[in-house]
Length: 390
Ligand SMILES: [Zn+2]
Image (cartoon, rainbow, N blue to C red; front, top):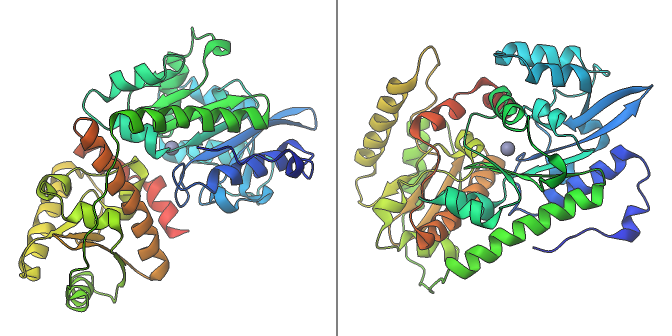
């Protein structure tokens, strides 16, 4: 992965926050790092004599973020929050808003407390495909330890307060000057520095390590396949009728999707789940696997399975639609469904990256994402659902 940092462009940005906007956009430009609202960044700055954390606002996209997309939050109360034993989502959101110095700014990212406790000025967080792919395999933790001996490696826990709390506890005796970054297993990566360029370029270098590891151990070789005909319109009608509204459809007949759909192991691959946890709110855990002409029957089986998954883990949540948001058509390719064209395209982007990660992970050993229960907690987390409403 190449650094996009340009020392000439840098001259246009003078304040801490302007530089933060600049390198956030550089991260956001690379879909192998973050996709559609994924990842978050921050900068610590002094305003009127007080330490302030400017952290990405919830609902903003790193690729297009502006100064107004950062929420300014007093640093000291955020650090105090990490010391609490428990903190509900509602209380966390309320306390964070109370600590903001600009009421018109967006809600801070769900990772604001974590950004606060990392003792460097610039903190960068992405969901790098390469890093998460290595992590999402059996033996993934050992591979990650091999690639990142100089990083703090954190087992998967729910993002938000629980994640910040566990890193706060793990880092009590940590010599931060010897720690070059943090790997969140099954989730992503953090780099940090007192300098904007270094924090960004450390991300690029760290991700390059994972990419080289994959190129050496799990090279992806794609075969050419001819186009195969399929009645997409009938499928679109069936999905629309199941969802109760007219869906937009995005057909993926790329070489990657064709290789995926033509895999001998497609039954197994279609059950491998997601890439990074927040994708689940867009894609659900599984695609629909279309391996027969009887679409109504396989849609019903999909819905029945979704309903029993919901029943197993739900307490007082309201079930989302038990219909698929994307499908693999055996021997043909993939297709995504959205409320509108924009949403169908977002799901298509995410699932393209997911298919590549699964193929590579399976080349490495066996692909294995977060558990059903952890996936459910993410899919039904009110703070994630709030992002969809934006
Ligand atoms: Zn994240």
